Image (tube, rainbow, N blue to C red; front, side):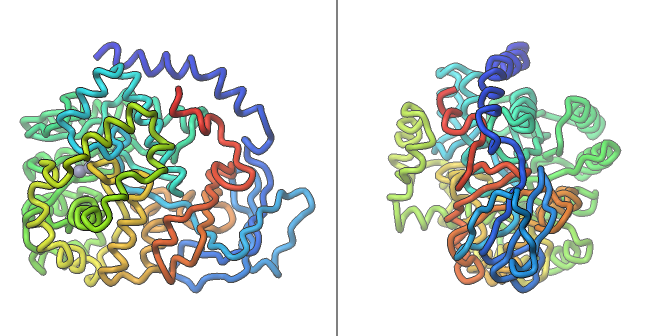
Length: 465
Ligand SMILES: [Zn+2]
Ligand SMILES: [Zn+2]
């Protein structure tokens, strides 16, 4: 593990001069004074939109938002015309995997990374994923499962403005009793609750932002994990499908129930479990789209696997490797039970939508065929198709997401005092949620990353680093 810790630091040091020269190249690389003027404003609340609005940004903060006619724009503000577009808070992805890029097979992806240079290649993969997320309008994201050192390094380099990416909350390796197909440094095997608690302590002192508890843990394990994490003010995301796992996680105080509702091979949950989740106000992140919707969607349009954006984002050998892994995608072990999961997919999502469960949006992005470029709008579309009003979906993607992370004072809405994480999309997502696939402008902390006036340091070069 020694090199695992050292290499990312070296890479960061080597990149530092370039990143800094990138920063000094133009004033637009640093936060300034920006006015977004003309478009419709969705502020993250489930309120009627404000038409022909204006948003003023000073430094990294929002200072004003309202109808353009009522907002005076000082002369020293850079105007960005958003007429005919929609302005909304940057989206929050509650379940991403930076170490994955949509490759079809974990069993060959990780050995391929090893062959391509190990940790250096892994770092490069994570940089590509982070940039794809930000390009897609995601200004905050939770990564649920990767080795600690590269996870924390990429988070910190993004925060220092050295590479583009969302504000990342990293879990590091997950806790489990039965290690999955991923390499060992992605997971921590625990055999007793006491050991689970000790491992949470270690992760906390390493500096992770959240804890991920995998399925198959006992109720006592969950209890130990939740109690220890909460002592360190860390929230726990549990990866749970089976009714018993969901109940154990719910009753031991696990903060976020992730994957619940994405069918698995289990039929819908008992009404009592749903009622208990709703009564406790416990958030669920379904990750609905990643298997049982993406599979038939790909059947209907296999051309999506050759989206030109992927070719642009990936270095040629990475693109070739991923294409190769998806050649015979219908036969991938990952989709081995998908035909069965599809039987339950609608009921699995609807029971949470209909019951008024607090829903955050997360996608398991990076998993097979589930590209970071589009996973979140696909997830949003599934929720709308399953009966969730678009305005509620937008609020899940933004304000509710921030609340689930405990960041609601800084993120998730467009109102004075909040961090200026704002996107501009082409179209009206209240009419057609797929408008979220047309993100034209991305502003994070007052810095324009994408769209008119963009000058994010490292942009366009992360693939080559
Ligand atoms: Zn998971
Ligand atoms: Zn996952």
